Image (cartoon, rainbow, N blue to C red; front, side, top):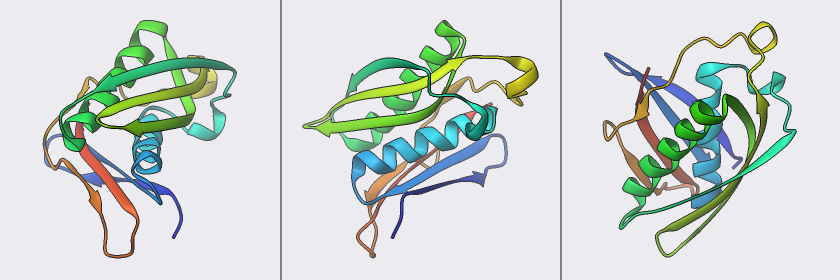
Length: 139
């Protein structure tokens, strides 16, 4: 039972999915899946830390808000992130994302992620005890 992420197919866009031993770990893995749509996380140096916070009334909306905040920070700061620490308490998410400014020759960005959607949205505990966090993102 390890933390992991993957992409899943969707007719128009792409799904991002993360698993973790905790809900926060699943959210962090989902963020890593989001990054991996754009560039290989292995080539993104975790040089600069950025703090993020969001809240919502339920876990599914919190995931959409988290990924949306991350997409916004990537766009505004012209950065990519490769490491995430996430804490979730009572509908509030506080996180630190580490990354660096986009370097097109090195990062070779593949797509621009426009936003997180409510399609295929799911946050919950699996039968094996791990947490799952997933949604479709607009690319």
